[in-house]
Image 1: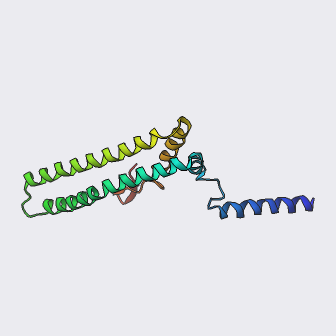
Image 2: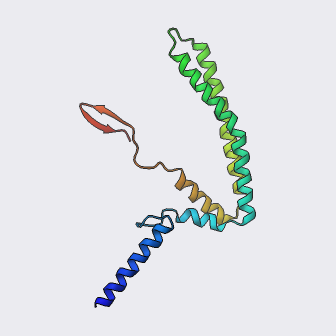
Image 3: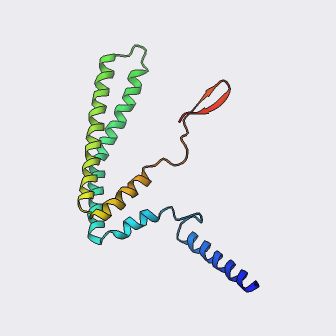
Length: 153
């Protein structure tokens, strides 16, 4: 009886230490799907995906910087003593154009990645994307009503 308990304790301790050593939580492998997708890729696919991501980043970096400047300008236009609606609307249109170009770059990158994957790898990639695009934790937006903190879901 004591030997069984000792064996079980050793087994549990080994599982916990190996799971922590591999960077996973004890309550389950939260990155199992991610690693499954990454393990399914060949070396050539990994290099191609890396190249696609790099090109996408390089194409979107100046657009993101310009968008950031336009957003700052938008704030200054709105908070003037006498805001000019024509300038505000022109700035908004320019921001929309840049956001549209950024979305096109992102979608093109995603389509290029999906085009080099097999059907099974595409399924794993979509699961991988779904997990990574989920918000971390509950929605933190809230408002105060009648002295109570109410979360806006």
